[in-house]
Length: 239
Ligand SMILES: NC(=O)c1ccc[n+]([C@@H]2O[C@H](COP(=O)([O-])OP(=O)(O)OC[C@H]3O[C@@H](n4cnc5c(N)ncnc54)[C@H](OP(=O)(O)O)[C@@H]3O)[C@@H](O)[C@H]2O)c1
Image 1: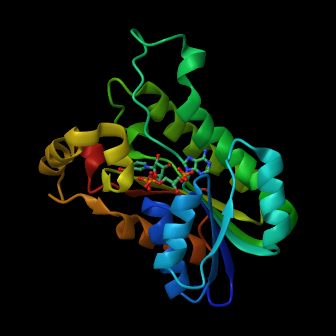
Image 2: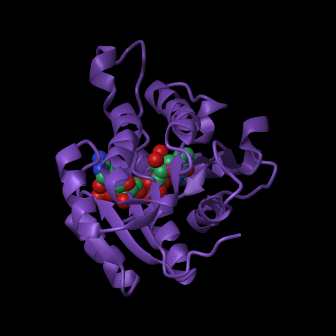
Image 3: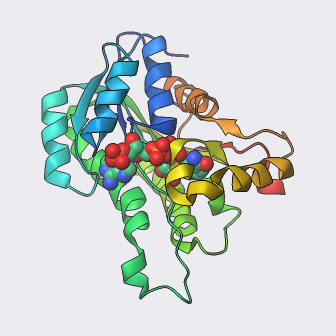
């Protein structure tokens, strides 16, 4: 098992939730960590919580902006992409499909953009972890773009594990995880929806962002794992 000690880890979407927990865990493992996100207030809050954290502002849909981030960031040992958002999208009643694809683009095109931009500074021994989700196996009615996006990201990890070898590419697939994302998407309903999900889970508990971060670090640091999708869903695929 390799160590993250002295490695440089870049977390795209690292200013909140699972990405922020991953940044913290990587720092605790001895890594230098750069987090990337769009909102300067979130980046500043992350930096205030994690001393020595490096931050950079970019949107994953802005490829030139990402190239600028990696040119500045220098050599990168590991790349983690957690940028994404849950989007409620009604296939039948919603607008034209193209108008509903924002969330899909952030997750899928965003991951591809981040990897493309990182390639010039990525070490040959590097590893990459993308973020899918339990909606690949358990689609949710009214959120079709999220399900299609998580499936595509998990397949992207498998495809790029071949294309980019010997760089390793894996994906983590979170289930219901307590992060700020749910307040953004569900507002006042967040607590009751999460409790409903929790009550169904074999583990009878929702994942914390730290639980998913631990799985990300396992994928980053195990040199024998590539093209894998690691589920952190409390058994949510089964219920
Ligand atoms: N929480 C769950 O239950 C759950 C379940 C399954 C899968 N996931 C997946 O896990 C990942 C992380 O989710 P989370 O719950 O940790 O969400 P979160 O707390 O809302 O964090 C999302 C992060 O992504 C960044 N981001 C979003 N859009 C971006 C863009 N266009 N460009 C750059 N950065 C962007 C956000 O910063 P800015 O807004 O400032 O850009 C933030 O740092 C997502 O891909 C999500 O789909 C989460």
